[in-house]
Structure formats: structure tokens, C-alpha cells
Image (cartoon, rainbow, N blue to C red):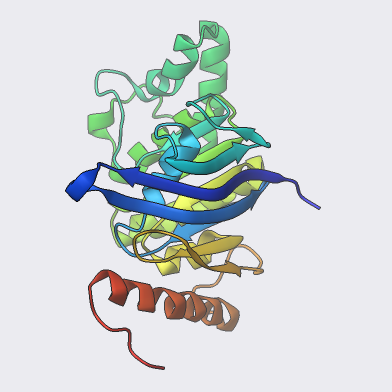
Length: 262
């Protein structure tokens, strides 16, 4: 049985105070197993990214606990890699030097950093582009660099905040396949945030559906389908429909509308 890698226990997060107080997450409980690909979906503003930022150590809980291997997360660390929605690359550095940047800061020798980066650049399908600058790359290629950079530390947990949200539909589909390939090779624990139920059902071992703000866990759906997945397969469509059914009610609530009766 796989061990629990990340655990949220009665987690709460509040921003501001007084009349400006916003309760983003309340009584949030979740277990993410080691090597599991977990995807969070929910209405806009339900706290998906906030939860991810707390796992990363960028934000601190207002109440409750968030644990990594049973120990409280108090700050960012190399055991967690983060891939942002936007292409957060240094425009004056090449693909290679973008990937090696964090390793250099950590004191890794240039030789080892380059060797590590070249291996990852090849793995994400950018072999031959190591000397290219970000402005010459497509959106999908830039996000591949972001993934390679996040993996350079060899983190135990990979956190991904809508990494394909700004890509066109076809590139997004290709990147979903590429991410599946990379994950199957490296078997990292992944926590992935998306608004796309199609994407969630394609990628996940487990889908977490969150309520409208304040965010709580509304439902947990296991996706026991072989990879690569068929977007038109009956089992895929059945699971996708189940996620949509749970999500629709919360989206209606977030818009201030009465959920439709079944």
C-alpha cells in the first residue's frame, strides 16, 4: 500500500480581516499518496491554487495542518518543484541556462548542472534547442522548459498550477500526452490544478472536486483507466460525466444561481 505523501488536516486559509475578510479554504481534508497523479478541479475562486501554494510553502495556513511525509510544511524547499501557468523564464538566459539556474544557485557544479539539464531537456523533447532563447520558442516549448526546470532538483512532489491553461487546444492536448509520458518515466507525486474536466480525466489517478468558496472537498473520484487514454472511450466519458455532475452544482453556487434539480 502506498504511503501518504501530502496530507491536509482541517486546513483553513483566510485572507484579510474585518469587512475585507475572505475565507478561501475551510475544513479542507485530503490525502495524496506517493507517486500518485492527483488533479484538483473546482469553480473559479474555490482555493485550488491557494492549496497548491500552501503545499509549496509560499503561503501559510490560517488553521489546521498541511504535512509532507508527516512533517509540517513551513517554507519552500527543493523537495517540491513548481510549474506556473505563465511561462516564468528568464528571457536573457538560454533554455539550458534556464534549467540550470536553480542548480547553480544551490551550489551544484557547472558540469553536474549541465549534465542534469541536458538529460531533462532531452526528456521533455527539446533536444537541439538548448541554446535557444525564450522569445524564439512556442508556448508549448516554453512550458516544457518550465517542467524541466522544476524537475532539475529531482523533487519528490511536482506542483502544477494550470500549466497548460494559456496554450491553444491542440498544443494543450500534445502537452497532456507529453506530461503523461514524463510522469510514467519519473513517477513523481503530482498535484495538478486545472479548470478542464477533460484534462483532469485524461491525466489523473485521482480527481478532487472542490466546493465553491470556501473550498472544501466535495468528492474524490478514482480514475482507474490505462494510459494513454482515449478521449472518446466509454469509461473515460463515464468518469468525465461524473466529475461534471459534481462540479456543475458548485459552479452554479459560485455564480449565485440555484443549482438545477436532476
